Image (cartoon, rainbow, N blue to C red; front, side):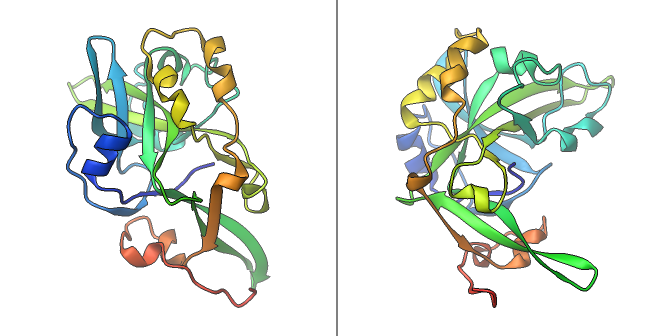
Length: 232
């Protein structure tokens, strides 16, 4: 799954890497959590330029009666998203890239009293470059005129690196596949099946970090610093 991630790359660098039409204004984020605003990159049928916008993390289907469902839909299984009612329309018409510099996952450790310890790890690309999760976005309007744009991150089976931490991982797209994933003219899910694969383990690395990342409202540089747990 994907429950926290980071985005520290500058707006200028993101604009160059993802071929954005405008340079976005970004503040470094060291602990992006569900229900918070997340940057997504999308390409709309009426606009040929890639745009970066901020939406709420936790997808609210257009048919939802209220927005309370959003926190339950921060992730969507890549294998079934095209058929699930909550994600079906977005998979066909509203795909996006979710840029990131890394994400967190927790390794279960021995019990300490009545609680089981969990050691957070930060996973990044081996070369330190930003990458993109496969995402879906949605437009929701409430009965009283409230409008919310939201997103979810697709997940897939874990690769060899992540398997020691969790059996699922966010679906990271190959850079060569960005155009196909974003193409609003591609509406047949079968054309996208080859993209729904775990990212190669040899192109990623990880290290343990402080449990300060467990706090959803904590967002500071020490979130990403390597620590040396006692068990290591």
